[in-house]
Amino acid sequence: MSPLYRKIASRLVPFLMLLYMVAFLDRVNISFAALTMNRDLGISDTFYGFAAGVFFLGYCLFEVPANILLTRIGARRWIGSLLIVWGAVSMATAFVSNRPAYVVARFLLGIAESGFYPGVIFYLTLWLPRSVRARIMALFLIALPVCNSIGSPISAHILLLNNFGGLRGWQWLFLLEGAPAVVLGIATWFVVVDNPWSAPWLSEIEKDQLARAMPDCEEAPHNRPSNIWIAIARDAATYFMLMAGLYGLSFWLPRILVSSGVTPAATGWWAALPYAAGAVAMLIVSRMRSRYSLAIVCITGAFGFAAAGLLHGLPSALASFSLASMGVFGSLPLFWSASTSRMSAKIAGAAIALVNSIGAIGGFAGPYAMGWLHDATHTYSAGLFAIAASMAAAAFLSPLAARQVPPHA
Image 1 (tube, rainbow, N blue to C red):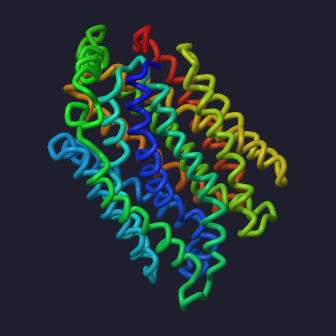
Image 2 (image 1 turned 180 degrees about the vertical axis):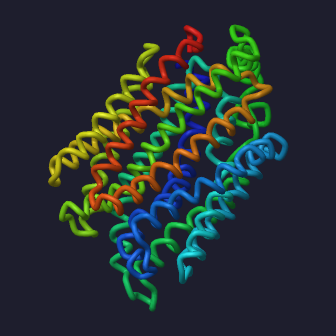
């Protein structure tokens, strides 16, 4: 990687990672809150899966217009505003008193977060050519497993504040983990710049160098317009399957570990292990270049979920979920590098949002299916097999999409 791209990465990626860690924590911390909140609010596993997934309905409905607004308003103001709003919504979730209010809070959180992730993916395309994007994307996306590795023990121990100050542990969870988004939203206005040409830390020579490199990622002459949209539709279907796996894991891992006999406090530490494995996988796969790399990683995840459904006991569960985590998280940088390499600058903002919106439906389907199948069968195995099938379907679709990837991507 050239010194210019290292400089850009060092400026952008750490802060964007921090923002994404906060975003992901605020959307999945219900997996720990549910260990006590479900009992307090009378929530079944089916309803929990539905409420977890409702986030993605709001997310899906508002994602495309949110990304269009980002291109018009600018990343600094738009992303900063989103952080403040979703932080406030997350904190307000601490005071829901019934199931309908809980669903509304989740829906509103999805709306508030809808512009962040696709906005950042689009934002990175303004700074980096496709030849280096997979590696930088991996550094950014590693925020997901790192967030869970760090956030899981913290969330579990916040629950120990039960009845402190007259609040339940899960209420403290939403309050303490929602507040950082508000603070960082304010900081974003002062830290983030909208594009390379307005960056004061790039010299004019560096801006010229970047301008000469950017046509590499702004045009896609090897694809006719009809082929581009066929590829985007295929990407959307693949991403749907991947998101079913990601959120099937994220929303249900703590509850599955508790069902294996782990105490809620210890669950945070044990859950950190699979996510750490996912972080390592992300760094490894970012250097893979085979057209079948994404398929191999997805199959790895499918085997992990299937093994988790077949094998029981804590050691087997941790090993199986570590494999599943490696497949789920390892697939993300490969997927987005391939997908964005097919998009010209004219369609990138809307196309990324469209793919992510369809994926968001998978984020609803995966957790809901897990809850419904558990209530129907009284075991987590059926849901884990369904998620394994979803990852296998992603593996089948990914080589088809890879045919559209330019050789230098």
